[in-house]
Image (cartoon, rainbow over all chains, first blue to last red; front, side):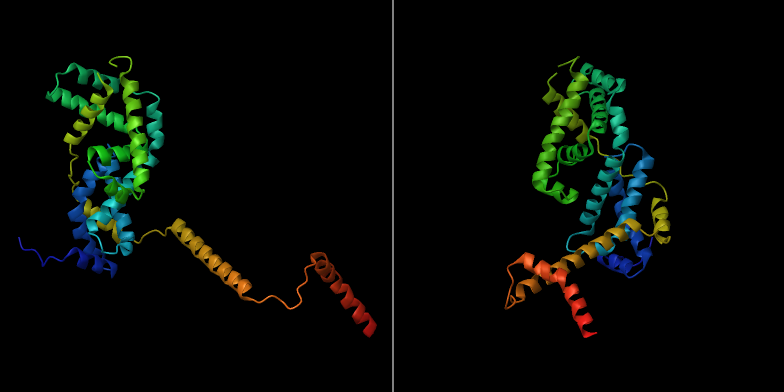
Length: 195
Length: 104
């Protein structure tokens, strides 16, 4: 299939800024998979994931004038994506708090399954994945964001600072609190049974 | 079961599960259709921008006044007596009235 001469990102962005909205489409096509993967870390329902990614694209289109071009467009876009995901977590905090009062039988069931399976088995790994998904849902928004970025995605403090807009010391403080929060939740789930 | 071990196992499980990057069918088209629609005005942003501008203007005005006050040399006969100044100001209008009646 023949493609028209591919334009660089800088050219596409310049064209969008001059009023050619259609030049934004190649950027949407290129980066949407990455944005969906990011959003799926924070939202469970597909409709929520789509809303997040759509909002990221709307914001990026509106704020494209503030993109200076001294860093790759992808970095700028990911900052926007992480901050949109954080806003999403904060806006859905009420639901989380409702759920927090009861950790849920299913959470305990997953822990039962995890403990009953032999180490290294697929069943155990599956139970662990289900359990961590439930534990992450119980975390506060900053704790969930920092656990995801620092422990699951294995990013450095400096990277997290850039992505979130928080200072490095603030990231450290929030990471410390997040670990404590996570341990408290795990202890609540498991204290009577296994600890 | 140790809490540390449980924590590590759960984090390892989360790391092993990469989220899918599948994009729903025609998602790009829908986004582009939204972008081509005229955007609704963001009143909160306008308001915030206006407040920032007003704050900056006030700050500049304050700096200008401060500079003027500092740069203005003190008057030749400064009065250190505030009560006297206050009395003079209060009585100025009465003095003016007295002057005008004497003219008549």
